[in-house]
Image (cartoon, rainbow, N blue to C red; front, top):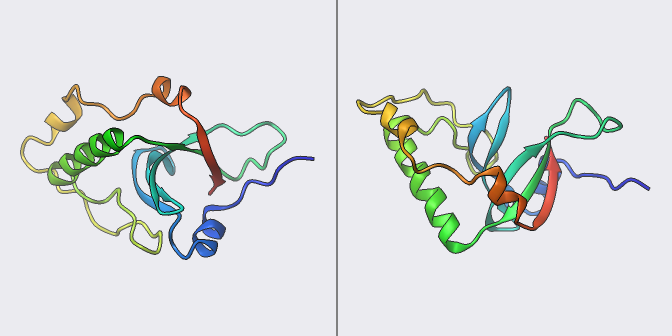
Length: 135
């Protein structure tokens, strides 16, 4: 029997908001990856392609536990992004995307040229999946 993957909305409701997206780092017609709260713990989420027999109208995500150092690194990187590019990738406490425009301060391109990158897919492949959801 195939396991049912819960929707993010259902998880948010069941957890009283303790499971929700914080921001996205990658976006292509919807969030690809970023940080989230998973049962009130800061974790990384990443979109994965579904199997052919799954509903093609949903995006499926896996959730990965992070070390304190990885969380610190991701939050510091995002803080620089917010400073130079904007907070338009952030979600509010209710899970809604913030309705703000990008900032694009002088030097914003430096963020994208920085060698300090987000967690890699290779790094994630060595981590345990602690949950999954669909949007």
